[in-house]
Image 1 (spheres, rainbow, N blue to C red):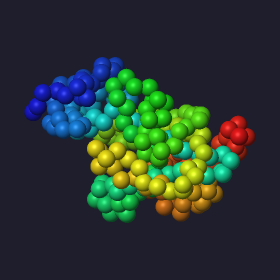
Image 2 (cartoon, helix red, strand yellow):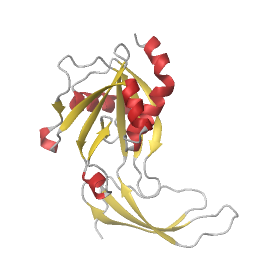
Image 3 (spheres, rainbow, N blue to C red):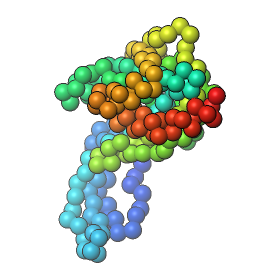
Amino acid sequence: MTERPPKAPPIPPYPGLEVTADEIAWSGRFALQLVRFTYERFDGSRSAELVWELWRRGRGVAILPYDPVADAVVLIEQFRLPALAAGLVPVMTECPAGLLEQGEDPELAGRRELQEETGLVGRQFESIGQYMLMQGGCDETMHYFAAHVTLPESGPATHGLAQEGEDIRLRILPAADAFALLDANRIQNVTAAACLWWLRHHRERLRAAWR
């Protein structure tokens, strides 16, 4: 086992939880924690002792850029090795997204990621919500926002940080076309799907408020 990296804090206390071992099995870019514990079951009895692998990714942010005048969204495409490993097409259609630094404000981080990954500047942001992606094995918690943008005049282009090996292509879609992809299950990551479902519900309100 390795020493505890900064991004793998101990498990916080919780009523009925007893942690008997908490170690770091891997401390690469993200830590992998091995936690041995019991907890109080709903009937008041003790659970069996469990050992869980906990992947510590921390907080992230994702942004759905929406142009209310054009009634269009700006999504991104990039190669994703885990998608290929899962048997899916590895070039995924996604929302711009990134991880937060320690203590960073989610909206400020979202503005940064939007500019880095699309070249766009959000005029207004509205919170969509805060959600866990893999509560069975990872602590990653995502903050979702919709951003009021104006479509780029030059059309689709590639973006991303060269030092991080990013190769990001814009995909600009009328909102109705994006919803059609959603209904056909051609949006295969939960973040983009959740944000588009939200936009479908709030679209007319945003078109009136953001004009």
